Length: 415
Image 1 (cartoon, rainbow, N blue to C red):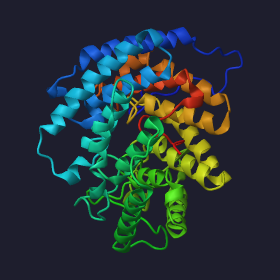
Image 2 (cartoon, one colour):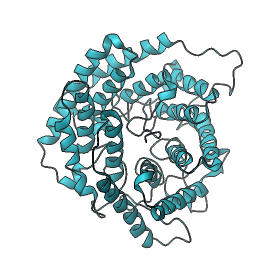
Image 3 (tube, rainbow, N blue to C red):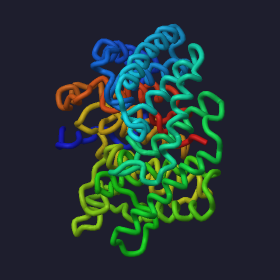
């Protein structure tokens, strides 16, 4: 039953006689979806805009992710050649535009993410250093506290996304991307930016850090403070003790803004409405709700001595996603069912509780039901990484490798 924003979850919490969906079923679904994506979003300049979020570079990342997973050895060469064509056209698209350097920093929506994906793909094909250099050349912009006029720090266009790119490239390429001191400068700029904005906001007590994007103090992962803090905590060894304390106090403030509303533990989309009498709008989406803020608390749990309060919050948020996360906006990872399903894979990695594998499997299967086919909306970019099937494919692939599952481009377990 479609309840508006989401379908009513038809599955029991526990099935004693439950049998997981066979591996070959998921493999068939993945290959079918890949074929659908390659036909529906071809590597052309027309489709290259929107960075890795909705453009061809996102499809390239999906193909790269499948190729390196090892699940499809007979298709690896085909996936990598296709990834090359998809990322090449994206690089060409952005190189032909006269974009200000500060606007090239965007990881999900602009140049830096495209260069990062190009480096990943070419690392499996040939020399990737050309794209590493292009990525590195944008670091100086991120050291400026006020890099952008409408918010310099969030994931889509700000320095948090760029920092994610650094970690991702360091892990997969196994080389130093930037000197440690440069990374520390970028982190200091992010902390100073949060302190500066907080000093201009009339709030009682906490938090010591706050951020805004186009004047909205978003709390979610996409444009909001939880995404920024999650990324900063990806670099605990590069943060001085004073700044780390500010970050933890800010995390704890967000934890205090999570409330039980109508039987669902969640956080409002933005701070202004969170502080209102009705507690604001609560969404389950990765970008603005439970399915995104859970990653901040997961990261805090890993960094701050496995403090149980953070894991408890993750469990409660995952319960909300189980109840309300069969989203009707489509299959994607930003505001769709796959984004919800990823929460369970991350909780499995944190807890080793197999109920989360059951939940992930149920959400993975729901996207192939008649109820979803008939009742779900078609996203604006139905084949893309964040709104469409390319991200869904990454989720389905990770159901096959739950101990390695990671939300695309934003792995909470990155060290």
